[in-house]
Amino acid sequence: MIELLNVPSLLTVQDSGRRGYRKLGVPVSGFMDDYSARIANYLVGNPGNAPLLEFLLAGPTLRFNASCVFAVAGDVEVRLNGTPVEPWMSHWAKRGDILEVGALKSGLYGYIAFAGGIKCEPLLGSCSAYPKAGLGRPLKAGDILNLGYAVLTRKDGRYLPPGLRPDYSAKEKTVRVVLGPNLDHFTGEGIGTFLSEAYTVTPESDRMGYRLDGKAIEHSEKGAGIVTDAIPTGSVQVPANGKPIVMLRDAQTTGGYAKIAVVATADLPIVAQSRPGERLRFEAVSVDEARELLIRREKTLRAIKGFLDGKMRAYRIRTGEEELIAFTKVERRD
Image 1 (cartoon, one colour):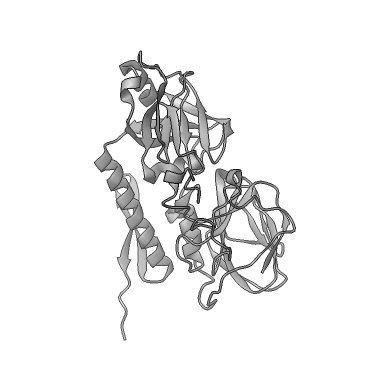
Image 2: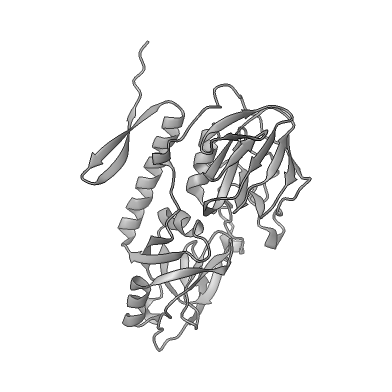
């Protein structure tokens, strides 16, 4: 139903990933920025975990071979038949229409969702591409993708206002982490360095992990090596050179470098959307605080879905110098 005409950068099919296979050495994979990807799906009326297109830095050009509702999530210029259309909004495309998605102005990953999702045969319970293990492959020009069934009425015209969109434009971002589990492999000074210095994302970064550069983190006399154990998504490993590596969606499931911290799940998109040359600072939070951050994020996503479905109303609240977005249910009258 859609044909790829030009693919200038990494383009893959992703969903929420594989669950239950890490014990067999299979990474979770899935959306690098699950916040943006889920909103893209909500914009076209899909469940949040529906398969969609994830692109790196620059989006594809594609042709619709049947009528379809689509949405693009990202800070990017989008054209339909040469006419600019809004990102973060669902649009109707008819057979023969050409969609052009440009280069991201900020952030690293963008998403294109289609009503009904991308039709594919799940491998180990997921459509997410993990090429290193032969689970799917990067897409290329000439590929044709089928879409799932969708009722296309009242799916176009859904719009996410700027105040509700994630903003990844800052060149230096703060990321919350839970310290541990291998703190005994670091000196107090090393832990202090990790929490006080800014670390630069290097070009040697990919879906597996982001290598960071900055002041070396000092190990204790136990050194950088540990008995190989599990690597949760977001683990911050510190090899012998003292430079941290944040392990992400395609990371191996076990490793032998000491872990100084694990990124709070709610902040994983912040890491994923950081470009080479941008900087990250780390702030320690407790397990309970990290859990509360995730609960709040999930509540926000549910409210955004309700807003896009017409079941919630969004409004602004100003408290001092801060402006917040709040939601309330839409009362329906017979």
